[in-house]
Image (tube, rainbow, N blue to C red; front, side, top):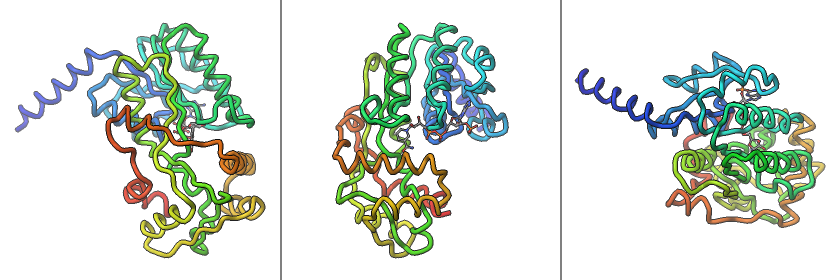
Length: 301
Ligand SMILES: NC(=O)c1ccc[n+]([C@@H]2O[C@H](COP(=O)([O-])OP(=O)(O)OC[C@H]3O[C@@H](n4cnc5c(N)ncnc54)[C@H](OP(=O)(O)O)[C@@H]3O)[C@@H](O)[C@H]2O)c1
């Protein structure tokens, strides 16, 4: 039993050793933590970048961990040594563009061959700082001379609903959809696409717009009702009502503005579904019902 287990461990290690070293930036976050997990499961040679050693140990156990902060470029140099491929993201903070640019610069300096960049649906097209910053960094990456793949996902299921106050207190899902559907994606599918882009040939120079399931407000409320085992009613609210609901849910006002801008683009019919996830993964994208079933503990709060 022990011998078989250690033979298994040795062969996983051998497999890892023969593979190029992949650095995952954002390894403690929604997509990054899932990506680390899936890369390890696929026997890849992974290094997880984290700024908090305690968090890194929890999400990337058994992996090479590099401590570095995207806002302090001098801390990134060592993390990129020996790296052949990197997955890069930063959170949607005001200096996101600079944080990502710092990662690109460190990668370029270290001679990284291929970057997979987590951008956003609407990058460079929608008129808000977040989408402009993603657009600018897509071009920055494309001008570096290394291989690149750009992922542009829609709204994460982990971000749905944006505000929990009314769901929790009154059984009401408040979103200003104007009768439109919202197009969601399971973050695990984004990670699965990133695994492909990082480990298989043929994804260089590609921009992938990633979508999962399109749901009306009533359908989202129905899925939530089932997952929470209590009635949830959808309210197609005004922007003002949604704003106070999101603020009551504890979202900072800068994020509330971004969420309201998201709904504005949605009501202007600027989002659409693509077959990309299905084509790349050769299976149906994850559904919101499945995602809720597996994550209800962390979403009910
Ligand atoms: N949410 C959506 O619906 C959605 C939709 C489309 C695209 N996106 C894009 O997805 C990206 C965010 O991905 P995510 O939701 O997976 O991220 P996330 O969960 O917010 O996690 C952010 C990650 O970045 C790390 N990080 C933050 N600041 C750092 C710094 N200064 N140095 C090093 N690491 C740092 C965090 O580490 P700590 O754990 O230490 O904080 C964490 O690992 C954004 O660019 C956003 O525009 C999001």
